[in-house]
Length: 481
Image (cartoon, rainbow, N blue to C red; front, side, top):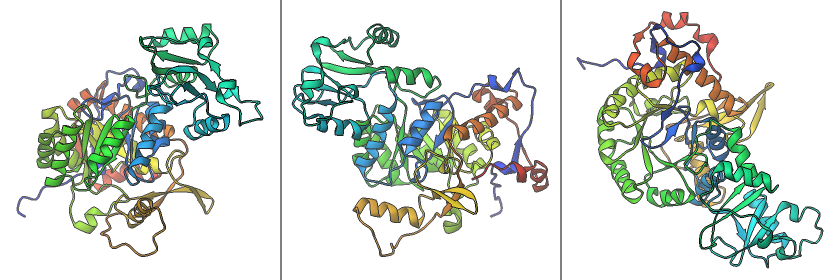
């Protein structure tokens, strides 16, 4: 007890201003990384919480350059389907286009199109991508068709009338081919005549519209997904099959033998997929998780407004100190750190990254957005959405109901370290991201830097008093949670 350390959080410090080389704050480069091999155009991550991130949120964030982590509080197939929705939402080439047989009815084909939210199906001899291409069936083929019992072969565009291309075709070449032939779909066939993919005008337009989007090598939006310790390998297998870009091993206390074992197993089973592990708050935890093979670390024990871990267990580290400690070790190994939780103001993003983090994760900022799961509530003339802590009773009860597929009346006997709250409805997530990034760009400028890396090198923190915090005008500047 004689040498007690002082733990600091974001509101305990300010960054000391320095001469800036920037003509405008908009010049600041905010590109970063989420893990060793997963880049971010904007260092913002939506947390893997039931009331925060499913496919709609992940799509919205990836389109502006950030990333979302699909939560794991559902059945494996449901989580994998959410990943699939993200990967299919925007891409240059659809790797596995949906197919159907020519002998199917229009009614059956339309049902598939509506379920998968697509406007066309390739027609093959086997009804999948392994059969011979026979034609294409699009929404225009049944637009005015009253008899839905007619067969697809009667209305489809036959292969002889299709324009096809080689899988190696470039985006510009495909765009020109689609324009010249006034078509919207371009099937790709390999040298054996087998289906290799599909390019659509809709997807090309999306590529041009979201020019700062966070994409993989095939033009698909980048998405992460969380796994727990119990079914990590089985769940990870389904997520990798669905196309996930990075796995997040998400455990309240990740510095454990069990978690370290899971990291090793995940890296052995899926060596080409990055694994981010958390949550942790100490140097020792960082060393052990990196040694196990973690490609990224998630820092934060108890900083969230819906987390009661510090109160219930008496354990935790104030967030700024936790980020700084972990980053000291992670930097030695080239492992990116994500600062998870505690973000109240845009300036907190700048402080977290200046302390060494490569990205920040937040749930409270995105829980009230248009794209977050859940209904909008109206109370006293204001609109709200629900925000639940992952370790709250309500979250665990709803997870149990999803897993069992039925309503559970009896009270569950579980340890609770989280609470549910209502947060203000904020509109589209893109607006929240914009506000956070403006604060970050401003912070980079005030640190006399041009990018996140030089900001970290230049950053000088000053501890302030409660009067100094009061003088900062914090009461009037707080972003609504």
